[in-house]
Image 1 (cartoon, rainbow, N blue to C red):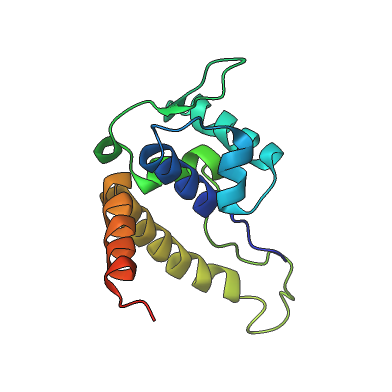
Image 2 (cartoon, helix red, strand yellow; image 1 turned 45 degrees about the horizontal axis):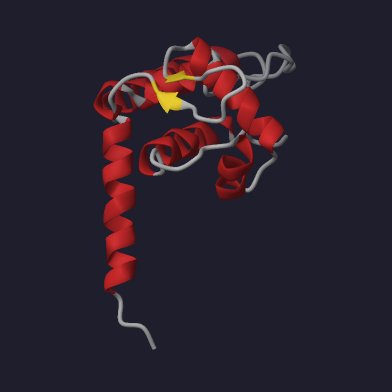
Length: 148
């Protein structure tokens, strides 16, 4: 099973909109940074627009953030692109005649719920401002390295 990158691609997209706000932002340009197709970028932008995180104008290639970075949490982004689906899923088809198969769903469900709650709390505390600030710190470190 392939893991979805919609969440990380959406964070990437929002950071890109902020850092390159003074450029002509087409889905082709954004896609070149994410290394995906412009169609994927447009789909993500549609979800982010529906969630009120970005604004777009039909026929214009200039998406923009709908609110300040500090007011956009990673949890909002996750819900925008992934919905409210759980992070973890217990296999519902196990052998009820087996000690493990007959009890694993009940046992794992609480652990998974605890992990989900912790992850959601962490994502809610992290803003896009945190992400962009850290991107810029990492870039400054690279620029400070001596060039051979």
